[in-house]
Amino acid sequence: LAQAEDRQLSSGKIWPLNVTPMAISATQIRDELSAGNPVNFLLPDSVIAVIEQLELYQSKKQ
Image (cartoon, rainbow, N blue to C red):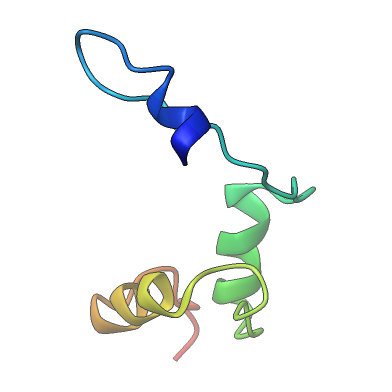
């Protein structure tokens, strides 16, 4: 973090992060959810909770 603090800009701070890229699209996530498949390995629990609370991307067959 000390290195990141050295990269301050007048408008804010920049923190470079190492992340693992995932070969998945939003469309694929929506398709998985619509099919009733779990996506807990693709999305944070907090995002899944909002999707469930708002009943997003559910299968239209009921």
